[in-house]
Length: 190
Image (tube, rainbow, N blue to C red):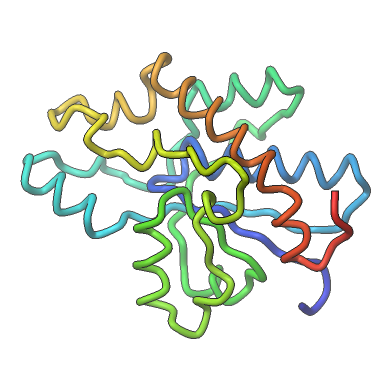
């Protein structure tokens, strides 16, 4: 690692899980006085694209460069973490992969696909459940839990009950992963 360690979290659209992890872990590092960079981005795995295409559910337009989910923002605020009002989602790029010392995906299929696309970076790409002691993290990996209809994106990103459940499970999994994240980044163990 050159300079400060850099971790990037990846979920599908960068509106719920990965952005929560970016601000949550960034806040954690700041409070500890650690000089680490935490970023987030979105990456749509082909499996999900195929499922949505088969169900004739289009990707929202625009897919990236959108605000975070209202419920993610509120969940972060409950933790005392503020997010800039002008924050926008972004798509994972080759430059982000190259710059990162560690990439953590929300779902296993993203890790597998990214390892295929960025073979040279595969050793630094992990699914969150690989980093966590919370092996039960499955809620957000089960695309069949979401209705494959025209309300799919609303349900996945804006339904208060569903998003709240996802974020509670994601936070528990992330907290459990912090010791492994810090170890992989070469930081003192928690």
